[in-house]
Image 1 (cartoon, each protein chain N blue to C red):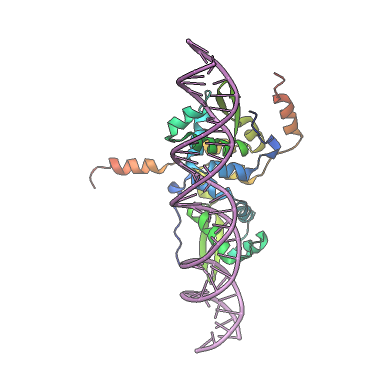
Image 2: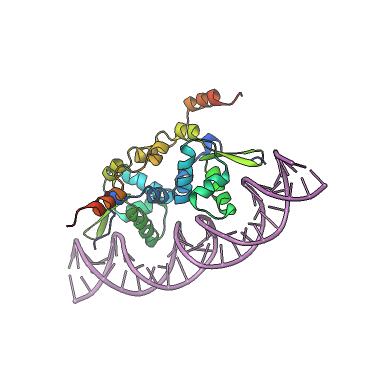
Length: 118
Length: 118
DNA sequence: ACTACCGTTCGACAATCGGAGTACAGTGGG
DNA sequence: CCCACTGTACTCCGATTGTCGAACGGTAGT
């Protein structure tokens, strides 16, 4: 079964953002980014989704938006992040999204500095 | 009327992504990023939205997710991008999103269109 | 060939979303 | 005070989303 993936040039930022604007899918992509080969159920179990069909839905969204490759291998499905394509088309986007929120004393200092004493 | 804006520390990447994962809101944010002071209706007219209440809805989504400031001024509402906060908390995110695609498919389309008869 | 396993497809369901119309509230100008 | 203007609140409606269960189709191992 060959899945239909968008070409690199057809990846739309709007689709990527709405695909990753969901906790389950964002967490799934973080797992893929952490490395290693993943199949569908391994990610499913980690995220607390109880139904296979639910993850199938999320994989389709991620695949259609160009975020992941989905390749059948035997009776499994291997999932990989399309980092090369995303980095080429939207440089820095994936890093900014996956690196997580910054909140430390530096931010507090900035906040003081930027606070409108007006 | 004072609007509720999330603190910088409370801006969640998931909310930002889903807020910007919509064509109308992404285009609106691009307009705000282009600079200048905007009120609601000016953006509304540019984007082809016909109902004020529709834009009010989008402004709320952007405001609640921490993407914009919405400040009443006289009988207007001044809208500004929260670039300082977003850059501080998610460095590079806004730039990556707003700078656009490196190779847009419209370029390919133009190339096809301009190609001399096969 | 039979069976266990992995994932998809389909249908259902509640919840949310995007868009619009109407009515209302606050502001500023005459 | 009255009116034009700006934007919100509320309601409605169709479309989409997220979740699930059940049935199905390949694949691998025995």
